[in-house]
Structure formats: C-alpha cells, structure tokens
Amino acid sequence: MIQTLAVRMFVERGYDATTVADIAEAAGVAPMTVYRHFPTKEDLVLVDQNGPLVAEHIAATSPAQPLVRRIGSALVAAAATLTGGARPDDPATGDTFLLARLQLMISTPALRARHLDSHYALQQAIVDALADDATDPDAAFRARAAAGACLAAMHTALVRWAEDDGRTELPGLIVQALVAAFGADAVDVDPAG
Amino acid sequence: MIQTLAVRMFVERGYDATTVADIAEAAGVAPMTVYRHFPTKEDLVLVDQNGPLVAEHIAATSPAQPLVRRIGSALVAAAATLTGGARPDDPATGDTFLLARLQLMISTPALRARHLDSHYALQQAIVDALADDATDPDAAFRARAAAGACLAAMHTALVRWAEDDGRTELPGLIVQALVAAFGADAVDVDPAG
DNA sequence: ACCTTGCTGATAGTGACTACCACATTGGTA
DNA sequence: TACCAATGTGGTAGTCACTATCAGCAAGGT
Image (cartoon, each protein chain N blue to C red):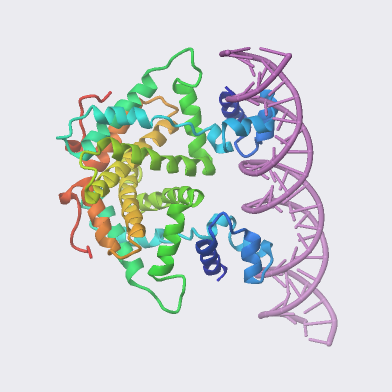
C-alpha cells in the first residue's frame, strides 16, 4: 500500500518535511489519488481499526465484574492479539510497523493530537459494547468515565512501549498502568502476559 | 482582546466558516497581527493556563494519600476555583466564556484533538508537582498513568458539563466521574462542591 | 459493440501559515 | 532637540494541505 511507503518516508525525512506530493511522486501516483484513499495527511499514519477488536473482547467479559476490570482486561487482551499475531503476508501488521507508527504519533504534535482524538471513537465503541442498560444516562456517564480512564492508562503504557522501542511486552505494561491507576485488586490478572 | 471576538464569531458563524482574515478585519487589525499573538487559529480558543493552578492544589495535598486521591481532589479544587471565581473586570473569565470555549472545543474536531493534546502538558505538570521521588522511573510511570486516568475522567465530566450548558456544578460532576472510574473510597469528599 | 461502475488524473481554486522586509511608536540618553 | 534601541504593526509573496469540478479509462456484464 501507499501507507507503508508514507510511514517509511515520514520516519526517514520527518513528518512535516515530507509533503503529500513527495509521497505521491514516490508511489508513482498523482497527489489526488493519495487524497482519495486517505482524506488527510494524518490518516496516512492513523489507521486504528481496533475498535471492533476491543468490543469483541469486551463482550467476552462477565457483566458481573466491575466496569474497569472488564474494560482493562479487554484492552490487555486486544493488545496481546495485536502485538502477538504478526501475519508475515501483510506488512501492515507486525510489531515494527505498529511501533514505527506509534513513535510517529507520539513525537509529531499534529499526529499526537489526532491520535488522542481517535480515543473518542474507541471510548464510544467500548461504551456501546458494555451497553447493559443503555437507557440510563447516568450509567452511560459512568461507563464513559471508566472507559476514558482506562484508555488513558493504556495510552501511558503505549508511550512507555514506544520509548522502549517495543522491547517490553505491551500487555504487561498495560497491566502495570492499570494497576497504578486503579489498584491491584481492580485488574484481572488472568489474561495478562 | 482579539480572542473574545474570535470566540464569539466562531460560535455565531462556525469555526471552519470563520477565516482568520475575517477575525482580523472585524478586530480592525491585519491578519499578521493575529498570527503574532496566536500562533495558530486553534490557539484562539485553546488558552489553557490552569497547569500552575492544578500544580498548586497538588502541592497542597498530603503525600501520604494515594496518587489518584491527591490528583482527583486537586482537579476538583481547581475546577471550583475556575467556575466559582468570576472576575467581572475580565471578560476572559466567568462561566459563560469558559462554557462557550469548551463547547467549541468539543464540537469541532480540530479543536477537540488539540484540546486533548493539551492534557499532555497538564499531565506532565501534575507529574512534576507530585515529584516526591523523581529519580525512580517506575514511580514516574505510575504517576503518569494515574494522572492520565484522572484527567480522562475529568474530561468526561467536562463533556457532560458542556452538554448540560453548565447547569450542573462542575466540581460535583468531576467527583462523580472520579467515583465511577476509581471507586467511592478513592475520592476525597472533603473539598467537593 | 454498448453501457455502467469505479478508479484515476489534471486544473484551479481556498485558506492556514511562514518567511522577509519596512514602518511607526515608545522610552531612555545625551 | 537629536539619536537609538526595542517593540508592535503592516505588506508581499510564497508553501502546502485540501477541495471542487471535470475528463479519461479500464473492467465487467448484457
């Protein structure tokens, strides 16, 4: 895809120093073609489609457990799926590509902002996946607060993971962040790596 | 200030539909003058200078308490200071201006992203204010995780406050969000409004 | 052969933002 | 009064992300 080329160029030459025209030229297409597949330049790096993945793991948790525990274990499990399962046929998966994108997102202000904003969509996906009693607005508020806090803890772990160049196991880092924020008894240690 | 005019125009005509040239013309200055005071168009709305305020409240908490309790009570106290203390001589303070800016930030994607990114700086300010043992990198990681989670919970409360047009007391909403995320025993009810 | 569909390309714009340079005002000094 | 540095302001021209509109163009079905 065009995307892998773009990420490589961003890493080598810097995000701001690489224009969309440069990428298009290197890919052998017209600049307009790039915009057709990626509405903005930032979307060349931000392709988070793990909302459904997290929702799936949420649905697999027991509704009897507290909110933070359900969300936290789902995030850990989703991270284990993402980092563990590298398919060699698809260059868009695998830790190195994930890591390069994440380091770009953290170091580039514009990307960092949009990445944090993407947590909005993920937060909503989590709230929808929880939706036991969707009618109560107060329950929805509590779910939003819990999901946002869990995502923020996970993000701290992601930053740490990127700083370590992925040498530490990501699911373990997420567990540590969750424990730091919510306490040891609020985290499910079963699926932790 | 130019800023109050800009916010008013953004509210009336929409953020994207209002150009910097429009604001400059309405303010009777050249477009370059606007850029001199506000490096980007987004900065016309995003003037969060409450990092020192939160840090001050953090410093007033007891280091013996758990991290989340210290941060949470500081955020609640800071919110009480911001919403309660409207100085009539300064139009940049007061709930209505704060509310208008917040509603802009939430409804406009570009502003929402930058606003979330501004939490990065606030998170760092909190970590620095906590800095009991600044040498231990693991303690810093835990502080970052706790601060990020608390800020996310506060942000959920901010969204709710904006949705309610500020009719609910903001400090109380933050307490509710903190309780939802961290449990009732993790929140200090003393300074809550 | 014919037509629809969907991907692609070119042109010409808008608007945010950034050089670079020139002008005006202020305030202190002699 | 004359001189000078500092600071706020304005103009011009340019880059770049992004959009709107129109024109091919290849694939596939009938």
